[in-house]
Image (tube, rainbow, N blue to C red):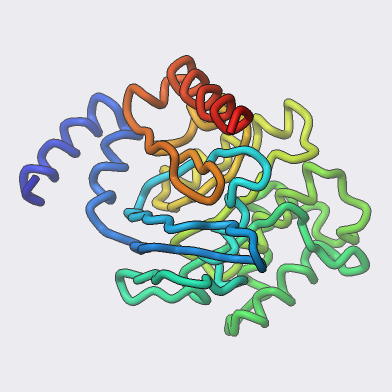
Length: 260
């Protein structure tokens, strides 16, 4: 589709479906393209030839059983692990250091530092000129400004996760990588986090989300991939992301894997 036609369609959709319209307006800009990504640990292939093109403004969900390669994929995209084979080409002059924020399984906060100190320290690592100002802005955005003086080790799981999200955003990355962000959260905290991700995306943030929760995928994602033994077993978008269809295909792939 030509950009002019795409723009007209996006504006029309924005009137009828604001979330879809905003996504279409941004989605022609590629953030990265990965080709043939592989990662081996001895004889074990954690990833085996993954191709993935990701456009700006999207939320991509990555599903799969334990050991399917989900976390390995995110760690490679974050620059925390090197692929054994394959390439990643970043668009728009971005780099992994400046363009990507990463939130892993664990919050990895410094428990003896205050919430504010955790963010200031992260900001200094990223070379921010005024990390304290950025820290205060993020604390306010995440609803943590009044507890910014408290040590991170005293926070509940939900509060710690919000602080870790703020830290991942300290350098204003275009892409957030979220590895099982709902782990250990109760239903209320899960709902708040989903709403937060949705709001970030409305404001232009791109996200890649690893999760087992098909309900959250249906609520958030524009696209999804299902990994099986390090390979992309399915690519889903549009009607196939409806919860019933998604769960059926996910279950079918899991059953196939269990019989293999």
